[in-house]
Length: 212
Image (cartoon, rainbow, N blue to C red):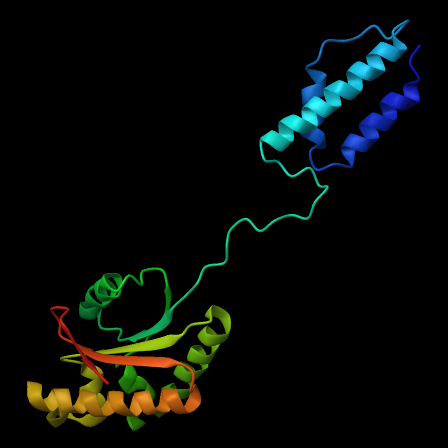
């Protein structure tokens, strides 16, 4: 008769493995053996079967537990943080613009009324630190290399912050946003000297004018 302890040891060993259930299921499908009088041959056959099973798992790319678990996917690389307005009319144009720059899925986003105006205007002073904290968090978590701020024309937040006269016509409106975006660039560079900063003013049709 085969030593019963050998069978129990095999079951115990398999139960400790992450592939125990799969292995026992595989073994249970094998034909029953008559152990009497065939001790040596069947032990060799059993070892061969076990090795074949392990080779099968290795060929399938299953980790048997003998080596450390590898990361399932490479950590993504992010490029920028986008600062944009909450105005529903500008959501798609801004997204489309980022896509044209091949940045889809490569940026974090902070959306707030007025975009850069929210970070600069005294009327929204209580909002300022929230933006700067989020920018610092994205730098820390996402390792971004730059921030892209996009204001837009016909912005209600600009009227609230600076008055109707600040956006009375396209020329005045442009100057208002240029001034705000220049202050924004200076603040970013003062707080994060190694961070790139890009600023622009977008029309509702999606066309954009960049300011440096």
